Image 1: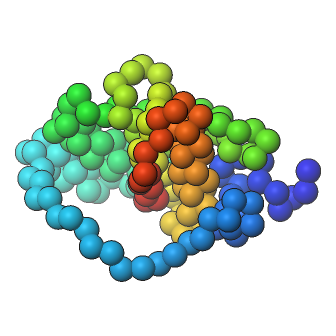
Image 2: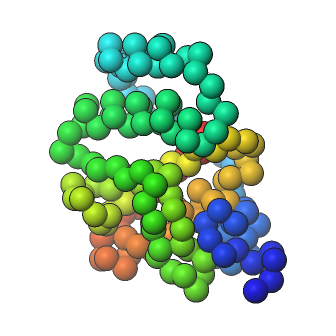
Length: 161
């Protein structure tokens, strides 16, 4: 296998997404619908307590930033989504859409990953831009997964920290 061909999600670049799947990386202005959310005292205290804890690794960012926010969202929206941390998500191994995702969010409350998946979050310890390809590949895999399970959705959200 050539060195420049991805073997898993973490090998993808934005160029791979474009050449392999025709996915364009577009920057454009769009309006966000604002929804005021008041963080709980628990979240404020948790983030405040952790502000001086080093967050230079993926694991540290996951534990100290991403998980508290996901737990807060989960608490505020119980019964509306499930999240999975560090699960293997092999959707199409021939297309290198395989590997572990830091966080997958599903609209189905289940102990196993089920469609529809609506969110992907990656916690990284270096340049955020470097990992857009991985996040994009996981988002594309989520779209394929949802289609394969006859439960497609129009928008899949992704973020890299």
